Image (cartoon, rainbow, N blue to C red):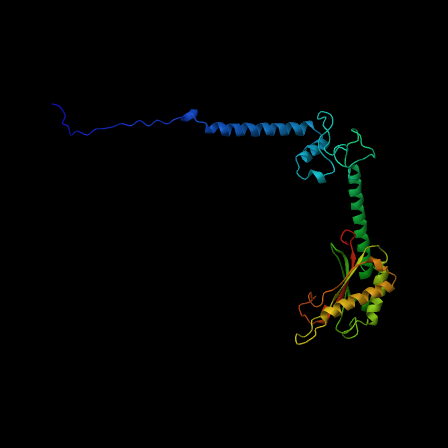
Length: 285
C-alpha cells in the first residue's frame, strides 16, 4: 500500500568545508615566519663566528639610528671590504674621527682622536674630583689636620655633590655670622672666609655663592629676606676676593631668602647660612 501524501519529507544537507585539513593556507604563513626567523638566527650565528669585535661594532652602528654621534662606525675590512660610514671622504671632518690630517681611503675614521679625548676627559674628571675631595678633607680635618679651630668648625659643613664641593657656613645660637640683620661680618665669619678663600685658590674651578636667611614674622609690612640674602651673598663675594681669588672665577651670586630652610623651624638661626660652591668644570656653564 502506498504512503500517504502527508508523510514527512526528510532533506539531508551535506556540509562541505572548503580547503580543510592540510589544504588550508594559514599554516603556510606561520611556517614562512618560522623559516625566516631560523634563517635570521643562523645568519646571526655565522656573523658572530666570522667577524671581529670591531667589525661587529661597525655592523651595529650601521643599523643604529643615532649613528651620527658614534665615533666608530660600520663597514669593515677583509671579507666585508666595505667603506666605513665615517669615511673622511664621505662625512665632514668634525675633529673627532680622523687619525691623520689628510683624508685618504686608507685613513678612514677610526675614532682614535675621539677615544683619546674621552680618556683625557675622564682622567681630568677623576683628578678634579680628587682635588675637591682633598680640599674637603682639609676643611673638615678628615686627613688628620684641619685649618680651622674647634670654634670655627662648629660653623661649617661640607659635602661633595654632582655640582661640586659645597661649603656651608651657618649661624649658631650663640655665634651669628653677621651683626644683627645686616651685612657687616662678625670676626668668626672673617676668619672662615680667609681660610676658605685660601683653600679655593688651590684649584681653578669656578665659584658660586648663595645666601639664605631665616624667616621673619608674617606681620612685617616690608619683609627684608630677599634683599638681605642677596646682599649677604655679595658681601661674602667681596670678602673672598680680598683673599686673592680672582673676580672672574665667580659663576653666580644668588639670594634664596627664606625659601629653602635647612631645618624644620623656619625662624631658627640655623637657617641663616651661606653656601660657597667650588663648581665642577662640566657644570660651571
